[in-house]
Amino acid sequence: MKKRTAAKVITYILLILWALIVLFPFYWMILTSLKSYSAYNSEYVPTFFTLHPTLENYVNAFTQVPLGRYLFNTLIFTVITTVVMTIVAVLAAFAFARLKFRGKNIVFGLFLSLMMLPNELVVITNFATITNAGLRNSFPGLILPSVMSVFYVYLLKENFEMVPDNLYLASKVDGTSDLKYLLRVLVPICRPTIITIIILKVIECWNSYVWPRLITDDPDYYLVSNGIQELRENGFGRENIPAMMAAVVVISVPLIVLFLMFRNKIMEGVLRGGTKG
Image 1: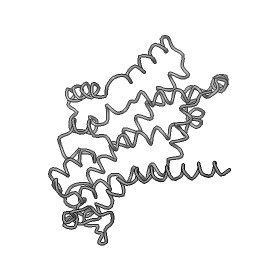
Image 2: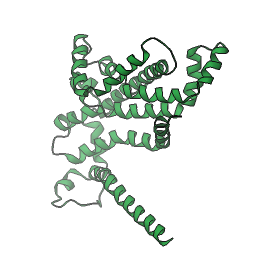
Image 3: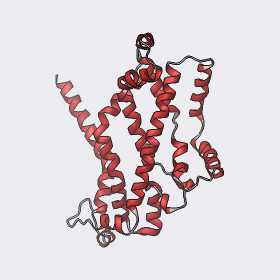
Image 4: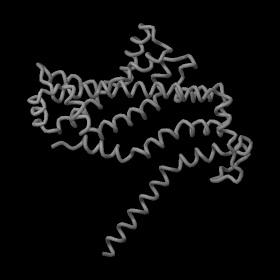
C-alpha cells in the first residue's frame, strides 16, 4: 500500500514538473506582453513577474498594424477550407469504405502512397499550378491546395468500416440511397471522429505559414502566421518584443480556447480512429 502511494506521489510530482515545463513558454509570452517597452529593455536580468502590467501593447497590436484584417483573412481561409475539406474527406472515405468498384484497393493504395511525398515537393507543384492559373493573391489560391488530406480520409475510412455491414445492407433493402445512409447513419455514428478532424484542420489552417507566405505578397491577403513577419519588419520593429508578444497572444488565444473546449472530443475521435472491430 505504501509503495503504491509513493509511486502515485512520484508520478504526480513528475507530471506537475512536466506541466510547468510545457506551460512556462505560454506564461513567459503573456508576461512579456504585459510589460512596457521601457520596462522590458531596462531589465538586465529577466524577471518572472511584473508589478506594473500594461495593456498598451495589445492596443498597439490593433492600431499600429492591421492585425484585425489578418485575423479576418485567417478566419475566412480557415472556415472555407475546413468546410470544403470535411465534405471532400467524408465523401471520399465513404467511397473507399462502402462502395464497390473495380480497382478500389489499387486506387486506395496509390492514394495512401501520397502520404510518403514530402510536403515541400507538393508545395512546389501547387505553387506552379496556382501561379499558372492566375490565382496568386486570392482566397481561391490560398484555399484550393488545402481542401484534401489523405490522412483524414484514411482515418474516416477506418471509422466507417467499423460500422456493421448489416446496417448498410438493411438500408439498401429499405430503398435508402447511399447519400442518405451516409448522412443519417455513418455521420451520426462517427461524429466524434469528424469533430476531431474539423478541429485539427482548423488548427492546421490557423497555423499555416509556408503556403500563404509563398502564394501571397499582397498584405490584403496576409494571414496571421505570415502577418507576424510583417509585424516584425514593418510594424513594431525587431526590438519591440513586448508588442510582438501581445500580437502572438491575440493570435494564439482562439486556438487555445478551441482546444480546451473540445479536448475530450479530440481524444475520443483519436481513440475511435485507432480501434477497429
